[in-house]
Length: 472
Image 1: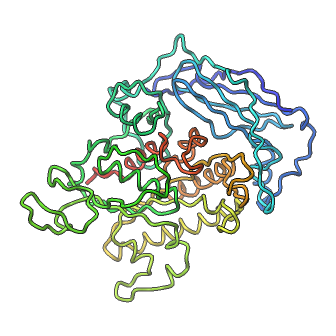
Image 2 (image 1 turned 120 degrees about the vertical axis):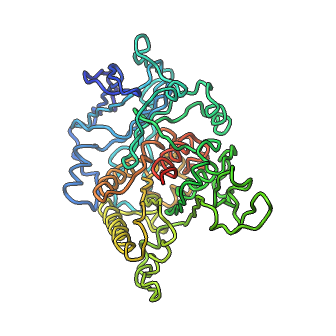
Image 3 (image 1 turned 30 degrees about the vertical axis):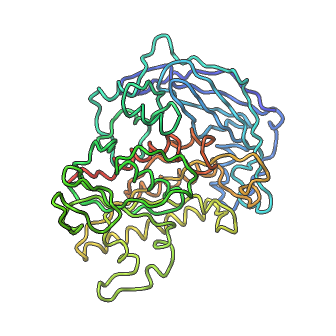
C-alpha cells in the first residue's frame, strides 16, 4: 500500500523566469509503501553492471510515478528520489504562482519500468491514482509575482545558450500576443512554452526572421526515427511561415518543402522544385540565391551500418557516409525509440548496450568532422534531439503490449541522462527533449508522437536557436 504524505516546502531559494530570487516554489511530496518496507529487491532483472544495478535499486526504487500539475503552468517532474525501504521523495519546481490541480499516479511496481530481461511478459502499468480528483494546491498565490508570455517578451533577458539543454516552462496562455492566439487555434491546449531565465532570438514565427535566409546558407539534415520525422514536419511549418496545425495522424503528412528564401527577394519560398523564379519570371538557378535547405532521412543507417564507411569514393577520397554528408553543415539526430521497442523491431536494448551504441555513433561523428578539413569543409554542427517521452498504454490488447514494447518513460529518462553525459563530453549541442515532452505524454494524438501538442513548438524553438540561422 502506498501512502502519500503532506507537501513539504524546501528552504532553498531559486532563480525565477526573470533571474530574480524567489522562494516558495520548490517543494516535495513523500510517498511510502508500507507492505514493501522489508522487501528484497530481487524483482530487478537486468543485464547492466553492478553499479547501474545498484543505482536502480537505491536511487529509483521498485516503483514509478507520474506527477502532473495544471494551473498557471503545466509541469511534470521526470524523476524522484528513493529514500530506502520503498519510501520516495518527489521534488518539483513550479515557477508561476497560483492555484494548481495535481494528479499523482502510481504507474509501475516491482521494477517493471526498467527491467531488461523479461522478453515474454508485457510490463503492464499499475496506473493507480494516489490523490483525490479534486486535489488542488496553492503555490504562493498571495504574494509571489506571476508571469505571462507577453510580459516576458518585454524584458531584456540574456540570450540562451546555443549548446546546453534548455530548461523551460509551459505558461498558461493569456491570449495577449498573436503567437498565443494562433497556437491555441493550432493545438487547443492553453499553454505556451518559454525558456527559463533567458530568451531565444530566432523563432521564425510567422516569417519574423525570414530576412536571415539571405545572410547565410544553412543546409540541415534531420535524421533518426519517426520522432525526427515529426520534428522535420514542424520545422517545415515554421520556416515556411505556415499556420497549418500538425493535428492529423502522423502518417498522413508528406510533401515537405526543402528550400526557404527571403520573401523580400522572391515571392516563392519553401518551393520543393529545383528552380525558382525571380520577379521578372526569369529562371534562376537555386544556387544563385542564399537559402536555408533541409532534408529528412529515417534511421541512423549512415552512422551504424558498416557499409557506410567500408564503401569508398576514390575520386573524392571519402567513405559513403562522408560523401552523403558533404553538402550539409548541420545534422539533427536522435536514436532512442527503436532500441527500446519490441524485439522483432530491433529493440530491447539494455542500458549498457544503448550507451555503447551512442558512444560508437558519437565517436564516428567526431571522426567524420576530423576528415572534413581535408575536403575544404567546416566541421558538421551535430545537434542531439534527445529521447522523447512516451504515452503509457493501459490496454493489454494494444500492439504496444502484444509486441512487449519497452518504451517506458523511466527507462527512457535514464537513457536520456546517459546520452546527456556522452554528448556533453563530446562537445555536441543538445535539445531538452525528454523534459519538454513528458508533461504531454498522455496527450498525444497517436500514443507516440507530440505533433498537436505545445511540446512540438518547444522543440522547434530550441532547435532553431541551436542552428542559429541568422549567424553569418
